[in-house]
Image (tube, rainbow, N blue to C red; front, side, top):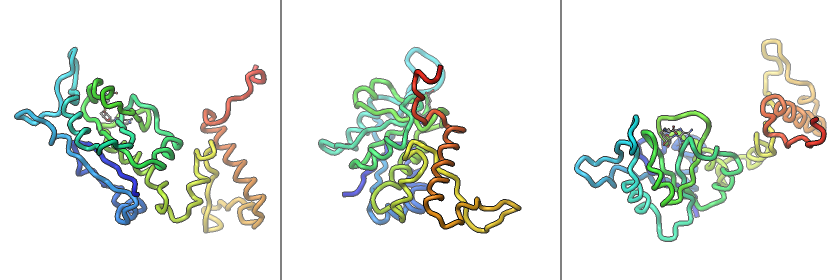
Amino acid sequence: MSFHATVLTLYPEMFPGPLGLSLAGRALDEGIWKLKTVQIRNFAVDRHRSVDDTPAGGGAGMVMRADVLARAIDHSLEKDDPRPRLLMSPRGKTLTQKRVRELAAGPGVLILCGRFEGVDQRLIEARRLEEISIGDYILSGGEPAALVLLDAVIRLLPGVMGNENSGITESFEHGLLEHPHYTRPQEFEGRRIPEVLTSGNHAHIEAWRRQEAERLTRERRPDLLPEPDQGQTK
Ligand code: SAH
């Protein structure tokens, strides 16, 4: 059974976009994952086919209407649809490799892409949407965020990556950033490949990579390392 993604958006033309190329594109052609886009505007009912309205309480911008979005979601779900229902949102929990793995192990996702100032809060509650952010910055819409999430998930689906191993040593999979990489030529603008990597000694190479991964993580992302023991820090 293939991974089934349904994306609700005002811009279905943005999909599959970059996911139609390379690994994800090939996997789409092979049926490893399926993509359905739903044009939210088709579920507007008024004369102007409006999907948004002014914010209650006043202020700038527009808010996506709960009733229109609810119809779009209900239409897109199958009976007893087990898929997580996601809302791309800067207020959500930041996406992690752990959540990506969980999603990849599941039946698929339904993703709602916000626009304007976002969506009516009652819709989020009534349809129990899981809000997911891709980072602490504001995009103009949820579509690029949905593409990011799907890209991260699809590469983990069985049969998508050529070398099954390359998903395992990657940054974050062991709570560390990955070690640096090198390839030919031996010398580039006076810089040589670290000697240990050309030594052929696999134990030394492994130890070096581990050390470098720990060093980089300490320098750049100390937040990823386990908390130091309380008593020892003082
Ligand atoms: N007014 C909102 C931002 C709206 S941006 C706020 O301040 O929180 C418009 C839409 O873009 C959002 O509804 C969401 O779907 C998407 N979006 C923007 N930034 C995002 C992010 N960092 N992660 C995921 N989705 C994002």
